[in-house]
Length: 119
Image 1 (tube, one colour):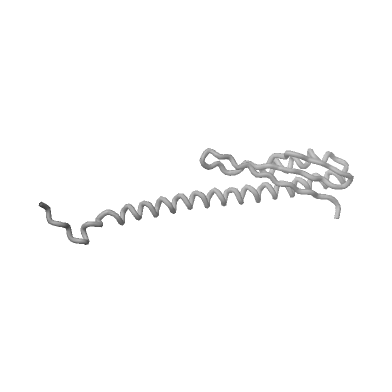
Image 2: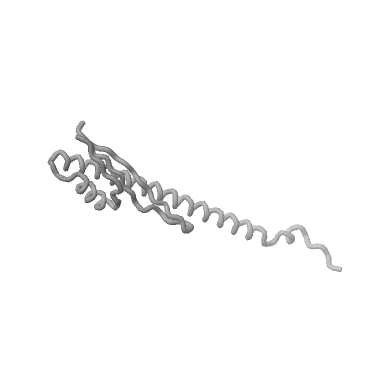
């Protein structure tokens, strides 16, 4: 018959498994936070592109040029795609989209809308 082990030898290796579990959890949380940060950044890029495209469209409208063409040029220059462009008598409303982060085979494209016209 074997003699029982002393209490300090029965738990050998459990700290290693616990440390690996904690490291795995931290890696998962870090990855998720990275995706959230990338989505926030993409949303900011989309909103900036929409604001600038609407301003460019309003300026072109005042000058008698094609506002949607000007808005599309500015949206593209800022990394976005112009989805819709509508004009009224004095306002230009645009909607743009940008490609968001890709994680776990999921695509998160973001869009933003802006309106500009005379004050």
